[in-house]
Amino acid sequence: MNVLIIGLGSIALKHIKALQELYPTIIIYALRRKGESSKGIEGVIEIYDINEIDIDSIDFILISNPTSVHYDTIRKVIMYKRPLFIEKPLFSEITEDSNALVNKVEEQGIPTYVACNLRFLECIAKIKELIVGKRVNEVNVYCGSYLPDWRPNVDFRKVYSANKEMGGGVHIDLIHELDYIYWLFGTPYHTQSFFSNKSSLNITAYDYANYLWEYNDFSISVVLNYYRKDSKRTLEILTDEGTYLVDLLKNTISYNNKLIFQSNQLPLQTYTAQIKFFIEEILNKKTKFNTIVEANKILELCLQE
Image (cartoon, rainbow, N blue to C red; front, side):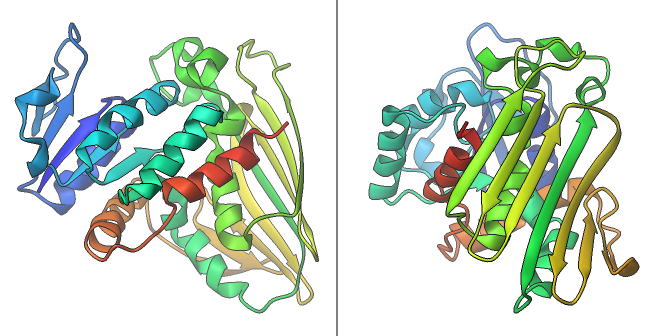
């Protein structure tokens, strides 16, 4: 198997680790910009011009460069008609041009998957099973963590997450929460949202987001922030029979305050499960799952102010 990666940041390293773990003989190429110094990653062949490789031998292209350049990257590579694995979020903004690009990719029949690895977190997959047939009355989602702790030894103010102009912001960085809500409950008929950046982090990107999604029989509240030092990531689902509490950090589910599910799955293992699904189901079986079209719908919901 041959893979071309565009973008060698921290997320790319997680995908590389997953690929090498699953497929020890895989050949991974990384397209770098001219002038960039080598990262010297074991098992990764760095190239500076796409013409250095036989593009027809590439099984798929993995796009993991900054969100703000996803549009240009996708626009340039679709000419090769290779399947695309695109790191979330799809774009930093939605425009007429980005919508046209999504339609063009779909019309050309290029297989796509936009990576949202929380769909592969076992407690999320399990709660999807548990709520089938349940009458839901209310859903509350919370995700708060401390941005300066995300990347140790790196000035958090310089990374894309903290900079609006680079496509950052808690509302788009933590699109995972909106993605799994969409996956669990589908499209809301009405949405409201509020974004701000008033915390002591003093960054240009939004560090707080609050969403209200309305469905026919219930509503979903989502709160996201970058400034909580004691991290919390939970999903609460109130049904007629009782309350499910999903703790994403502990990978557990409680029902009416009693533990009913616990997984030893580590966060990094979601990347392995995701890559495995992409290759076995999307590449080999042509299964459609979080395609560029679906991810664009979720992004639209994410960005609505």
